[in-house]
Length: 494
Image 1 (cartoon, helix red, strand yellow):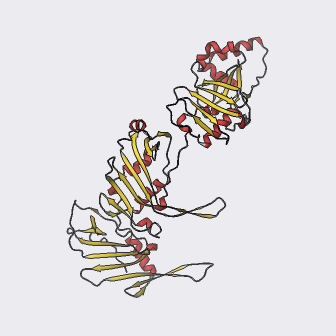
Image 2 (cartoon, rainbow, N blue to C red; image 1 turned 60 degrees about the horizontal axis):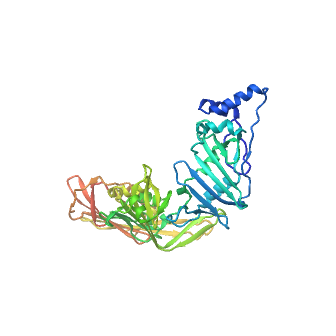
Image 3 (cartoon, rainbow, N blue to C red; image 1 turned 60 degrees about the vertical axis):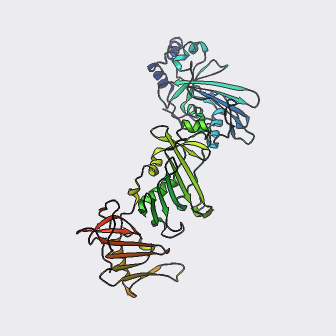
């Protein structure tokens, strides 16, 4: 099997030897071409076969005027080349909406395929050899017909039928109007031309920046809030990632990992295929008049930074904004219809389900201490039967600008203790998790132990423990009581 380089239409395709192709033709029902070659072999002396390659069109892109593509079972479309080199879709009738510019990456591929239309071999030079049996080649009802018009008034029409060997990565039968030959055309060319109308439309990118998210709301179709998460504090806070709250259906500190998953998924949401403008009939058809959910992403004003290809850290400022995705009916098992602004697209079910199907209870914090050591400014421990104990962490930056380091001190009720001992104890405390869920509407008793955690950004978290039963304490976090913890479950600080 050999590779044959296309002249300009650069797509890597395997090009099997013609004898393999002819054998495949015989095996898969391409009988006519096989008989032609068999009869020719009887009449001519045996000789090495030479493949005939060439081009139907070989022009510059600037000479292209328009492309019309008609696919089997699909909507036909025509794209006209503009003065700036872009392709603009031409409405097929007066009822269609205004034309729009074809997605630039797809436009470039189509234009290249049209002006450099090559073939990989010639099955026969004679029309009478294939035309009576063209249905066997898929040319009675072609897989695709393309009409290519040039600025000099010339026009080329090609018809592409079935695969010559029944596969998807081989050659296809092709004819051209005004030409008697039956050609073999590479599968890559067929794939380029078989572009559905919906794929031509540019797909706008969602402007969701996870670093600036401060609220995620999932609403029902009637506008009532189903679940919501909100940032407590500012997006610029050092410990912002740890300061999220579940606010609906109840208020409770959110789990760091759960919120990271929600924010990362939001950051990576991508719209799929353009379906149409958000007009009455389209909204009805796509289940968007009575949506299954509305997801609202609110982003605070702020800045984000990226490293450029040149290695420069670029900072960009953003204004406060909201991105709304309205979810309609399922188009398939993989995608659903969504509305963004005045347009309808498809979007992957898996990404949507992260927001629509996640149980709010699965996103609440199970850890008692939610402030990591690098964000901790201090902690107060108050017990009903003892004196309060206060720990304060001090950070001292090194004066060495070339090798900057930060030193830490820990004060316990004003007296310095070993920072390493405190940090080891704090890391153990961060692993403490609740033991189970309390009954609905449980009312806690008076607290016997209270922890007050202060973060470097000025935020405060309070955890209170009260008797639940003989073996467990009820846990109240920031005033909200949902879980219980085994007695003695909180590890001691030095």
